[in-house]
Image (cartoon, rainbow, N blue to C red):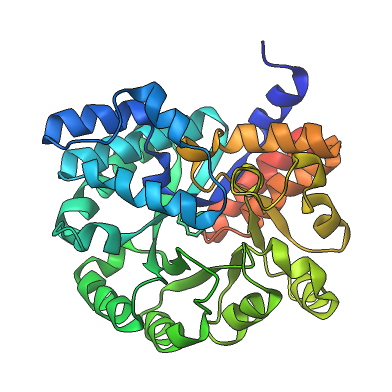
Length: 336
Ligand code: ADE
Ligand code: ZN
C-alpha cells in the first residue's frame, strides 16, 4: 500500500524534464512490437530481457537500449510508446513532460521523421485532450556519431520545426565533449529552439562548462559530476541553471553504489536548482514517482525538500508562463 509520503509526492504538481521516450520501452511492449513487426529479439522472454538489464556503466546500457529500439518501426508503434509513457506520467502527478527522442536511432534504420513524429504527436494530442497533461518534444543528437550527422539531422527536422521544443545532446559522453556541436546548437538557436545537453553524467566538470559556454545550454542533463568543481557549482547556483538529475539512473549505471550516497541533497544545499527525473525508466527500474520516493527515503528528504524539487521542475520547464503560474499556484495550495 502506498504510504503517506508517496501520496504526498504524487499530489505535488511536477514536471519531468529528462526522459528518453526510447527508454520507456517496457520489455512487454518490446515483445509485442517485435511480434507485430517480425523482429527477432536475442531474448526468449520478458524475464530474460529484465535479466540482461544489469549495467556496469553508461555504454553497457546504451548498447542494449539502441538494440531494443529496433522493434519501433511504424507510426502506431511510436504512438503506443508515447501513449503508455504519458499515461504513466499522468498517474505519477506529472503536469508537464519535456520528452527526449533520438531521431538518429530511427533515421539510421531507414525510419524517417514523418513516421515517428506522426506517432509521437498523435499520442501527445490525445493525452493533452483526455488527461490534461502538457507535453513537448526535444530532439537529441547522438554524440557518438559525427557532428555532420547532427547537422544533417537538424535540417531533416525542419519540416517538423513547429512540433519541436528544443534540441539536446546525448549518448556516450566520455571522449565526446560538447564543443564540436557548437555550430549545430547555434543553428538550433537561430531557429528558435531551446537548448539542453547531457553533461557531467560520467564526464568531467569541463564538459558541463563546455555545454554552457559552447552550446548555450539552458539546462544541464545530469550534471552531478560538477560537484567536484567549486567555481562551477557557484556558477550553476548563481545563474540558476537547472540540473535534471536522475537518481535511479545514476544508481543503475554505477555513478553511485548506493542511493544513500547520491549528491542530490548536497547540490540542493549548495544552492543548485536541482530537479528529479527518470531518464530511461523501463531500464532503470522506476518512473518519476519512484525516483522521488526512493531518493526521499535514501536521503531523508523533508516535505519542504520535496516541494522545492517539484517547484524547481516547474520553474525549470519551458512551458508557457500561464501554465507554470497555474501549476505553481496548485503547488502553493498543497505545500504552503
Ligand atoms: N540516452 C538515453 N539515456 C541516456 C543517458 N543516461 N545518458 C546519455 N545518453 C542517453
Ligand atoms: Zn538522459
